[in-house]
Figure 1 (spheres, rainbow, N blue to C red):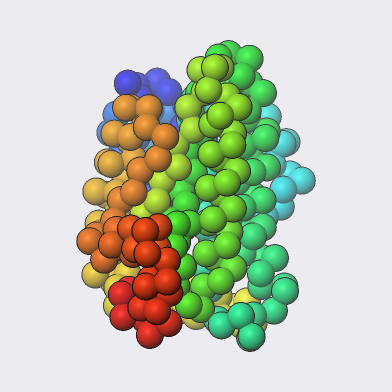
Figure 2 (figure 1 turned 120 degrees about the horizontal axis):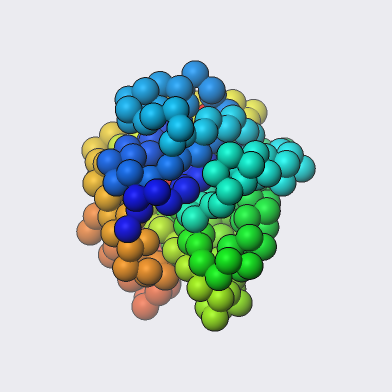
Length: 264
Ligand code: NDP
């Protein structure tokens, strides 16, 4: 299904995004690799063995929403179309609300929410005109429940759910698919890259992330979900799934457990 398709992945320099590059490359897709660190994108391209003709490295900071429209033009100039956009770039934080500055909250939202929305808006008209395409957004199980010290992250992922659920309704008749992906703990650099109260990466691993799912397995499940045109997929272990269920069915019990952090 993915042979010759043009797939634009943000956050392609690490973790889930990097694994997605390898998974799509194995299927013969043409790839646009985006993130801030160009040397890491080059490393990923080399590891994926992507021929120069099938790959465009497009460094970007997703929080610079103004430049996104001009960047999408570079993709159209090179490949003439975008079949799949994967809004994967994201950042977390590890701070209680009382210590969380507005500046860090803005930073989290600019990357996790507004950046991807700007890309979506830049790409949507062409998908609507051609009556095909797929928007994929990497949310989180924390778009469905919450944990302490991640208020802005939780909120940004909840916001993605609202936005993309709405978009899906609006484009349902236009041949454009919208897939929301909610991973649980995945073995990536997400914990290390989480911001402290000063907006600086904490550079410390987290036990649950270190023991989390293999990002390559997560990537394979995402490709499968696109192929099956699913609306949403939760890729997570039992504790996170239980958390989502409890939050939905027994919110007070969930809150009591999470206050003491007995669940996750
Ligand atoms: P990583 O920290 O390993 O990767 C994050 C990626 O996002 C990197 O490629 C990074 O590249 C990119 N990125 C960060 N900020 C920006 C920016 N301003 N502009 C462009 N790119 C940026 O973490 P994951 O792979 O885990 O994260 C991928 C997604 O998965 C995120 O949205 C995260 O919230 C989500 N997720 C992860 C979970 C996990 O347990 N790992 C669980 C649930 C969701 P660079 O630094 O080069 O810019």
